[in-house]
Image (cartoon, rainbow, N blue to C red; front, top):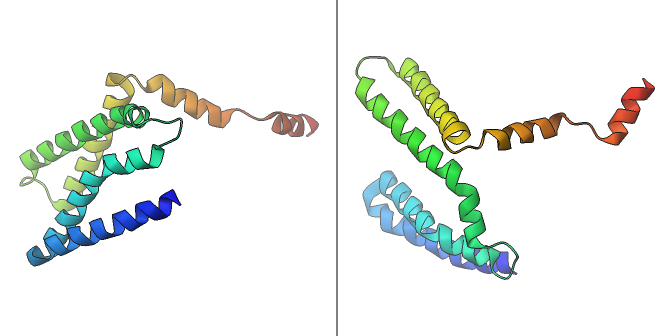
Length: 140
């Protein structure tokens, strides 16, 4: 029921964003949609976790490190692309931009934000075998 009520609120908000941006063409529609969803994200999260054991603060703490890393990486890639955009053709520029974006993101998230051990333990969890798999391997 909660999801249906959220949809009844979200749909008119998105449509309003489209209508407000329509006079400005495709870029206006995209901006209107993005603005509405940006303004809606915190109320949406609050509504979704209402009367649950999860708080809005829990969610914000969970997404803060990847979000900050993403913002820094995007700003770095954008700034560097702005600096060298006239010097190289589009495909190498794209590849360089992607490399900068992912490199800065990984460095920020793993080292600056101290998430390296979290992600290493996550990867090691994928490699662990269940007792059933261990028995199957032992019988082979």
